[in-house]
Amino acid sequence: MTRESLEAKIQRIGDPIRMLRHSPHGPYKMKYPPVHSNWQEEQQAIRKTAVLFDQSHHMTDVYFRGPDVTRLLSETGTNSFATYGRDKAKHMVVCNPDGLMIGTAVLFGLEKEEAVLVGPAGAANWVQYQAETGGYDVEVHRDERTEDNPGRRRVFRYEIGGPQAWNILEKVNGGPIPPVKFFTMTELTIAGHPVRGLFHTVIGDPGSDSKGMEIFGPVEHGPAVLDALLTAGEEFGLVRAGGLAYYSGSIETGYPAQPTPAIYTGEWLKAYREWLPGDWYEGKLSVGGSYASDDVEDYYVSPYDFGYGHLVRFDHDFIGREALEEHATRPHRKKVWLIWNDDDVVDIYRRSLFATKDRPKYLDTPLGRYARVHHDAVLAGDRLVGISTQCTYTVNFGSWFSAAFVDEADAKDGADVTLLWGEENGGTAKRNVEPHVQTPIRATIRTSRP
Image (cartoon, rainbow, N blue to C red; front, side, top):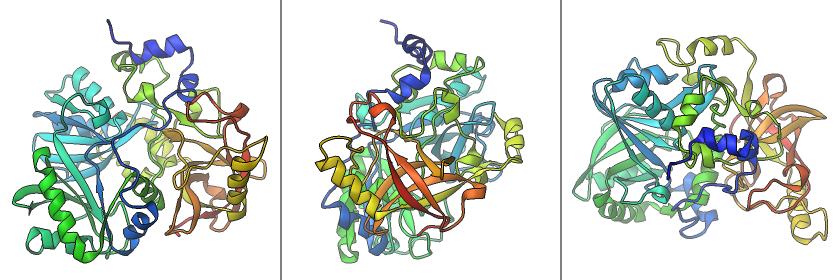
């Protein structure tokens, strides 16, 4: 039986936004325990001691090997590749010819002619398509996330961060770790096995006392490395944490997750949609929230309106460059944190649980995510001034909050706005969305991390 393409799936359903907003899938299923102890202590450990996340299962790894690897990456990514090479990493952004985002992923430079893109598969799928159709001397090998993988993953990935993380890493390494630049990799030995570590501060406080590292190596060494990290971490209060702390911690840093891939329309992109299987990332994506439009293009964003303008560099030619040069001159939305009003949140809980009619959308605690991509409307009076993305409660903030993008003129610290919670017409057809009514939540803008 021939595999249905994304283009065929869109034509069968009749409309891409109907496919996305009424997707039956909800958030992605993944082999990621929600908690190992309790999410409150796991969240606290990010700020107070150290935390370890097992990221071996929920991300897709796509490997690119060959003489044209760097050229391929440079011609598809908005990032600068002037200093790229072995042991260098990037938060890679890829766009369509109109300068609108297709996706992001973490790029690891493994060797001179080998790299891997790790994360949600939207960005890697686009790069793979260019590799196979653009005349590049590059081989592509996919290692699907565990949920979609019929075999065994190739590598383990453990993220460790927090104020005590570096002490744990040096103890398990058997000595000091040489200075490592941000988003650069180094080599360590753990439990007698060579591993590589990417230095970053994706979780925890962004200060100098909150160094973190993502450690990876052959999957067969994973159990021994994990045991060594946990044993070394006992002295320093290391907490093993699950998916709830992982995702809520990333929202603390302002991480908005992924955009709606700007690939569902346009004649130039039709060949790509015909290449994409309908059951890959783009075909199973779910879009939810109170912001609703009949035109899928209203969900597309440029890097400048998604907080990634600093990842666009015009020192090389790449897909979408000309359009982004024009985008750069426009007013942009600004990334902010929305601190939700406690009384309004309590009212959501009360009415969603105990009201006999007109119940609001239930607020799953601590992570209120019911679609893969969230677009909640942010209002100033009756004006739409922005979009709220992922929302959560953490004990570190002591409140509910979300990462949002607000029009620059309205992005004033301390300004009051309203977030509209819940979907139109009583809720879309996503299986995990119960019948409900839309409900306003008062919120306060914070332009820097609380």
